[in-house]
Image 1 (cartoon, rainbow, N blue to C red):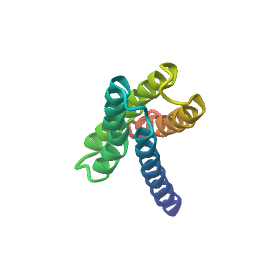
Image 2 (image 1 turned 90 degrees about the vertical axis):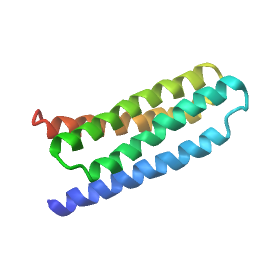
Image 3 (image 1 turned 120 degrees about the vertical axis):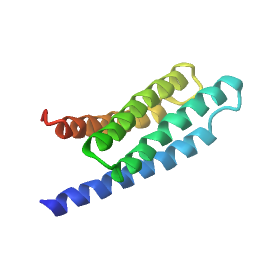
Image 4 (image 1 turned 135 degrees about the vertical axis):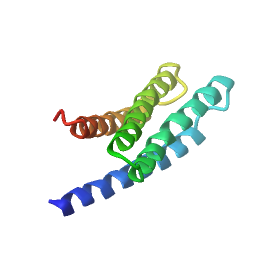
Amino acid sequence: MQNDKAKFKNEFKKRLYNFTLKLIEFLDRLPKDNVSKRIGDQLLRSGTSIIGNYIEGQAASSKKDFTNFFNTSLKSTNESKLWFALLRDSKRAKPEEVAWFLNELNEIANIFASSILTLKGRK
């Protein structure tokens, strides 16, 4: 059981890391106009914050602190969905490319939400 838990944590960290790498590549391909730059900056902040807070949470000093880092990662995941949707709907990014990111963000958000509920003893 513990081995499965450790394996899941390791795989999830890799998944977040790969998501972040793909995000950086995506942002490099955005148009160079003013709006794309501003939204891209916001997306870079929120998108990289997901793994940043996850990693910080691994060294948390208490369960409450750990849960707070997961909450922040979840919020950053949800914020990132907004920026991707705006890039897609303003026709600054290809819908099919954004679809992958939105799907991945939904799955990541579900993992964080489930973890938070477990940490709070509600699951």
